[in-house]
Amino acid sequence: MLQINRIKAERDAIIEAMKKRNFDATEILDKAILLDDLRRKTQTGNDNLLAEMNKLSREIGQLYKSGERQKAEILKQKTAQIKEQIKVLSEELERVKAELQEILYQIPNVPHTSVPFGKNEADNEVVFEHGDILHMPDDALPHWELAKKYDLIDFELGNKITGAGFPVYKGKGAKLQRALINYFLDKNEAAGYKEIQVPHLINEASGYGTGQLPDKEGQMYVIERDNLYLIPTAEVPVTNLYRDVMLKASDFPIKNTAYTPCFRREAGSYGAHVRGLNRLHQFDKVEIVRLEHPDKSYEALDEMVEHVKQILIELGLQFRIVRLCGGDLGFTSALTYDFEVWSAAQKRWLEVSSVSNFEDFQANRLKLRFKDTDGKKRLAHTLNGSALALPRVVAALLENNQTENGIKVPEVLQGFLGTDLID
Image (cartoon, rainbow, N blue to C red; front, side, top):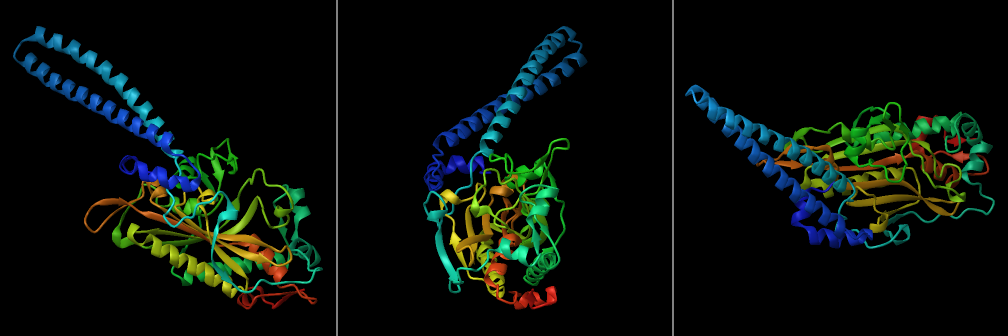
């Protein structure tokens, strides 16, 4: 959430920057400014009335002490009128505050200067490529056929138990999942990230804190009876650990990693491009989350990108990194890099990680502040990244490593999996 003081000070610059999102922010920013002016005016009027009533209360006390009861009663009637005015103004103040908050919740983050213009993923900018594109025979099997051939994943059984998009992993398929989770967590821990386990359900305040709520696309699963939500990513509970927290500059960097299942309705996702593991309602992911001093957050973003890059190199996958254009940028992000692995059998790129800097957008919602070395209180910067999401990594590993004898296991996973071949 943008700070209203920033909106007022940088109105024209924000409107210009939002054009990268193909979003005309003029009307909503001006509405926010008008509401804040009204809030300030109403607050001032309310404060003045409170001050006047306090003054009259002191005068009434003095009048009673001096025996001037009649004058005191007259003033008491006046204070009763002021109390009624205060009540009306207080109600108006709360209404204006709520309306302003709702408007601010609707304004996306300001794109970083490096974010390219563009309408959708076709306009994203490739900034790095690793490995030669793998070309396989025409009879190479896609991962859903390989999963069936080697009895690794049962999509039909998951459909029976729950529905489409909830696969069942079996035997070496389940073991491969566990191997990847352990490998990712170990790599993250070696890079200084502290492993934590968090709830898989969040309350409404947590959803608002990291920007998943209000849920404009209806992508979250909600348990209405308890007003709880299934997490779409570990980023949400991990970042919310620091909601309403005051840190010190010396606390930075704060680096956490967590493994969780993730739940997404993926409403409106249909077609061949979402077959198999390409798009699921439940999947496993290991997340990295950082809290940083504002002066260091883009340096931290670069470090996170390098970290994910090295993991994919060790897995032996061909991949590329793209800088998201404004039209493809997430609501809360100022700058995002996506990692896409090459799926040899499908002959297409599959996103396996997003690494983002939210600057102080989430921190403002979370009231996540720190006391700087000069004693001033400031908002922290928050960042997160997938390190990594499992389904499409598994899809690429199966497809790209298939042989006549079985599926070769990357060297870094062999110790976890206990074999060098899935057959």
